[in-house]
Length: 294
Length: 267
Image (cartoon, chains in turn yellow, orange):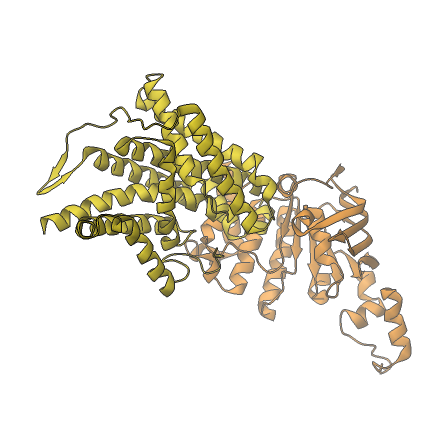
């Protein structure tokens, strides 16, 4: 029973961090209907920038993190402005290929700049493990979860109450009508890419802080993908619930089944559940019905 | 009095091949209500889209002519710049943001407005015109009735504080009683706020009832225009748009002369 609780709680924490990265997908998809396959690489670049700022420049996290946010926003906005803007109205498959290409380019750039070796982060959070009753939680995981949830809530609030958030939802709902309100729809696209990149790169810092960073860190993006599909691509709450679900599932599968199968079940379980859920609810748990599937 | 909006000899081409407007000209004077009437496919909505800068979004293009608003050329401007200039289009078919609440829809209407205090005052004014919106304030716009949605889109337009409001078929799909109410309010907005209104309608009777000037479109160009009194007394308008027929003699629809008269407009 203790093991079960331990697995559930730590899975929940991992899931919260997944949710933040999933938000990186959702924020962009919701406004622009583009699935950004480079989300994982945005995450990795964010982690590397933070690494450089704190190791080479010796900046405190309180300066480093805001700088990463600015850098990520610029990266997202530039990618939209220079590449995706020109793909408006092109077939979906071409746009998807562009984002996949982008992920390879970012991966290559990271290898050129930082090399392919593994680097570990300087400690961000207090090292003392968190103990709740019988459950022991790694401090990196616990504080990472808390940070991720704070960021998710901030995004939720911006979308709910800020003028720009309302305008972005209006754009997602009816683009032409948004134009008629005087909303600059194209700049909404740019902002949503910036937001998506911010969410992903903050997720990258948290993940990097737990397990270190290397150029292939972005492959976690693939694991996040079932979460987004599970929650329904355009729902922020869906991303959160999907993230928590996959985190718990993965941990349970890893804890109970991996010993019998020499590992591997941990990575496989979320996809099995994804397929089952999609067979029953083709638009995800919280998705809007018209979403075009790949 | 100088015109607020002047459209000169406008030609619009869709998909590089379909000529929808073939040299259309019209004027709207400050603070007046002007009706633009015509049957389906005459190009009324296209005219409004050309003015609001929506054509590029639908693969349409202005190939000739020009549009001037308060003496400035509008052609080629992006839609959000045109809204900022004080020209607001209420699109056909009540395009409320269905996933947003009434409140959030109204926030979008006031998107170009900066002063919060002023927005609040305008909002109170909207509630005077449409008290029902206050009751529905926190409800999702998608769940409103058709009439309430029409009220919402007109309020949204009012919050943008336009000098010219363009309404595309506000009567569409509404019960006759409601149509009358909506038109009364349009007239009130014009009188109280001084907003000029360009009204596109199929319901000619209602539209001419509140307008001072009217244009009649057929097949991409204006075939007849004049003050409302003039139009209301025109035999063709009476017969084809107001459905009054000719009272003195019983006109048969097979009457050749009748057919020729309509034909003159179409060619």
